Amino acid sequence: MRYMGMFWGLLAEVIGTIFGMLFVMAIRGMMGLQVYGGEATEPVVVGGVVIGAIAFLFGSGVFADWIQWALGKDPGLDLVARPDKPNWTRFFSIDYDHKVIGIQYGVLSFFLLGFGGIFALMFRTELVNGTVDFLDNGIFGVLFGHQGAQLYNSFLSLHGMVMIASILLGVGAMTNYLVPLMIGANDMAFPRLNAFAFWVNLPGGLILLSSLFLGGFDTGWTGYPPLSVRAPLGIQMFLFGVYLVGLSSIFGALNVIVTVFRLRAPGMGLFQMPIFVWAALATSLIQLTATQLIGLSFQMVMLQRLFGMSFFDATQGGNPVLFQHLFWFYSHPAVYVFILTGLGVISELLPVFVRKPLFGYKWIAFSSVGIALVGFMVWAHHMFTSGMSAYLRVPFMYSTLLVAIPTGVKFFSWVATIWQGKIELKTPMLFVLGGIVIFLFGGVTGPPNATIATNLHLHDSYFIVGHFHNTMFGGYIFPFFAAIYYWFPKISGKKLNEFWGKVHFFLMFPAFMVMMGGQLLVGLLGMRRRIAGYDAALGFENSHLWITIAGFVIFIAVLIFVTNIIVTLRRGEVAEGNVWRSRSLEWQIPNPAPLHNYPTPPVVVGNPYDYGLEGAVYVNMNPEPAPVGD
Image 1 (cartoon, rainbow, N blue to C red):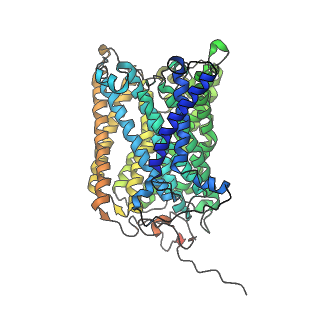
Image 2: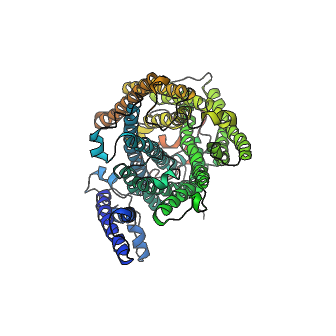
């Protein structure tokens, strides 16, 4: 374990960035090009940032073991906390324990979630009235170097991509912490790769946020050319930051797949796995096979800006629509990366709080894989107005509508599971039920975007914004909060305050319904997305006021949640034993989970969701040792 690797990594990134900029300047000088200022600014800064990110990884120590191995030394696996250092330092250091890495993912996810939420509140405040006045203030110009509509565009664009990065990290948090525990493994298959997959996110996140101070960008979170080719320098930070986060996603997915197939406990066949593990496996298949496409599309824009390569320049034989195909081939399946994990949480928690077997276990498992596979065939419904060949619209319309079938399987299973169950309305269950209701609205508002006739009218309207927020909040945000309330005793050994948890829910749920309803309404009335000002005569101001108020209420609810976590860690109720009477493997060991999860490999002997069935046993935690042969 590298002690306080984060500090050394950040120091190395600063030094590496300065060195990289000087190095690029020297190269340009030797080539007879302008060394600094003007056209030299972008290649110098980008070169410095790239070398700085690599320096961060070396400085943090994430490559230390691999370097020792290359030198012929045995680095070993340090899974023992250093007794001479406070335990909290593990979370700021290179550590190979999947539980530590899962918590690191989760904290960084909330850090970015906070920034993304603040960006949203800033541009939402601007939209309360139709004139651009709130952000057109000299104070913002001093802080960020730009203001007014350009700053609005930057906040809007960063809100989208920072939130997406945050959600990807949240998915990493849940899969890293839970998958090994749920399948009876002591760690991920590749602990060093697991650490690398997390630590590459730190320079990625910092570089992404730095775009705000380098001119910002006005492309929206999609980064379409030709806007992205002409945008300020900040767009390069956006492109490279997302590239690094995508790299993390690929390596993390590889690790999950190998872990699930190679490290399951004895007796755990595929159909004895918890349903959350099925969801993690499906999302990892998407991440492993599709993430390269967004990395490639962003890399091509970077190269076009830096070296004049005309990939998307129609005047030089390029094709800007090609970017959209590459981008959406990943970015629509990425939606299922978010929601499959959240839907896995819903399916995992429902049987616990209704004390009934999960209805249609195999159907739910296969529906996750089905959504993942069909998700690769729907990307072009985002491009019905792009100018692509009109005959392609029809097959993509039908493939998009096809997603409703495996998604519907989950809804029918949830309803059947709840039916006549003994429901316990604890905080995790409230967020599960809230997620189901909100995601249902996302499903109902989806088909109008899939059918050609309605899509042509709704495309790039606030109706799309409302639909997307429905799917994200119902499919990920609410299940994510449910997961934290449910597994927090396992993580910390303490139980979050139930009263404040319910306050959190009963503020957040109605506020979101108001926000989503307002977005859908103004979209149907013709409000376009990604605009800073609008004509007051159109009558949108009251709706935007309510949307903005709802956004602030959601922010307050999240602050209550964060306060609940801090207070609980300091003096919260101790959580002993199997807090929720769950059958799952992770609840059969002490709270918090020990360093080495299972001193004796557990043996799975039954089904994971046989709640309410007398005599049903899922796992034997203390199996008899195998007899030794003569």
